[in-house]
Length: 446
Image 1: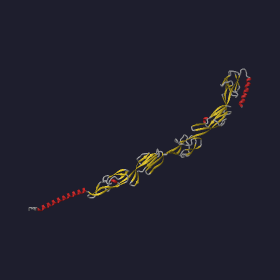
Image 2 (image 1 turned 30 degrees about the vertical axis):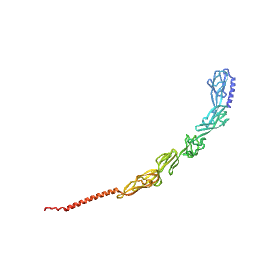
Image 3 (image 1 turned 45 degrees about the vertical axis):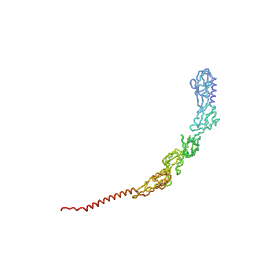
């Protein structure tokens, strides 16, 4: 109001000066705010001021601040010019026009929207924002303007009558991503208010197939913004959302392992991928003591090995069987020993060998007569006994005492020879004795 009174006073003064202007003063320069001006380079504090023809008149200030939030901005001359300086070319009044501008400050929690600008007093301005802004895991959702004709719309109109502070209010949200292995449905992904506590969940167990499954292990924060998870080993837990977190549900993969043998289950169950398994089958399984047994031959199925003990790193489901063969015991009984006794696989061939004869007492021998026991039609065999081992076998070699004719003959010949030697030796001795008795005594000289 004061400026307008000053302007009115300046106008009245201008009329008074115009009436008393002399011949050498043919123009008046002024502005209604009483701001200083320059005439031919000299600053004139008091306006209106006279100016002669041909003078150069300039505004003293193009922008004049009334307060930090109000200002006057030069807007041109009454004669139509917009430059800050004009040439007085004719008599008359030359008014410098100013417009009042007011500072408008737009504030927001979404920083890119923050700005300030000057608007003319009485001007209607249009403010517009988007419904939401998404940036690096954060989302800003529009709620309202602090003032204006349309405070709840993204497009707002307001008339600037005074310095203006207006806020575009947004709700700040953060992105929570809950992830896991492909194909696993986990819950909790979404937008949340900063600091909000929410529930995240994942399946505890997932059946991939009849022989493969996944078991939940723990929650892990894998993003750039670490999260505090209250109970990581639980498949259902809570989390306080304080930033754009990425939470992953970690699973362990398990495979079904079945190892079977003649006696039933050797090993059966679910085992974790990468685990080292020790699987062992007995080398021998006794069915009937000292008669029938099973002998380990190898593993069949998903693995093929000859050793009875396996040490494997589990990488897939396993179904294996311990393969055995039936073995029967063959017993050989012989008073003079023999060969061929032992364990044989079912339907194998056993060759039994015993001596055909062996010296016994003087001039007698043990001669193999036959076999007895589990030898069937081959019991009368006197040579090597060949048997098909289809059951436990006990075979006995049967011997009989017989004269040992060669020994007897040899003994007789020896006796005859000895008798002859004795006969001739004794006869010679008798002849020599008889001749000795017939010979005269020998005379010796005196």
